Image (cartoon, rainbow, N blue to C red; front, side):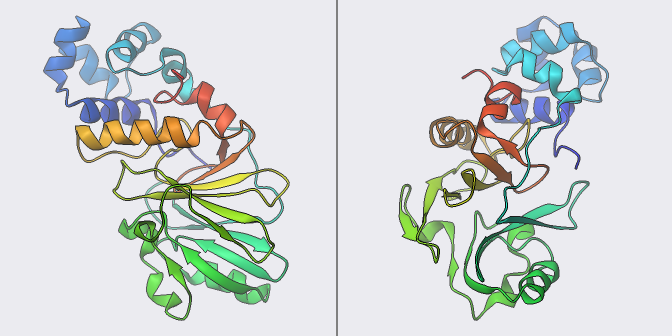
Amino acid sequence: MPLEDDVCDVIGKAMHGLGLSLAQLAKITNLPEGDINAALTGQYDDRILKQMAATLELSPSALIGLPSYQPDASAPDGLVRIVSPFGHAGVNAYLIIMGQHALAFDTGTDADLLIEYLEQHQLVLDALYITHRHHDHIAGIQRFEQTRIIYPEDTQHGQTENSHSGNKLTAIDVSGHMNPAKAYYYDGLSVPVCIIGDSVFAGSMGKSPDSESYKLALKTAKENLMTLSSNTVLCPGHGPLTTVGLEKVHNAFLGLI
């Protein structure tokens, strides 16, 4: 599965989050505007990326290494990813399966595949958890009128709930990309998993609407997600699975930790 973002996307998101125009970034970095514009269209070298990364508060090594990054992470038994059409990489919904019971996380743009999986495996859906209310994550929600639905505003950071398996599901604040937004941490499989919406992608993170939201997105990701155990499988709303340990090294926004 392709990454959600490339180097150009990361640079653009950082510029937007810091409120920097192309001209302002050129002035601060002492780089010609033409070099920065070229970098934003995929024409760059390591020297330019390193210079830009310092000003944009990004990890230089992670930014330079992004084109060759593909996270070595896989779903443990009991975690199922359902991909529906959206953009170049689709949008992810997830199921955590406990015997013949399941918890769902987001619906994607089309809930058919999610519902088909539940029906084919004769699973009882105990609840549907929503990471955030962007349309591509809740477009199929009308198909779950008979299901208990938990929206991000329905829980507090650190709030836990017992699942059918007896293991706890913990809500984690990941606001910033959208407010509010929640991730959901579950430690009942062979490794811990956390469904994180668009707060973090493999090698990147979701775009924030303004500078204050960007600061919040960085804060919640660093303090609430990157402090989980390194082997925690992160399940983003777009792109491939990753882990906390991998993102500490390979995520340009978070690699400074």
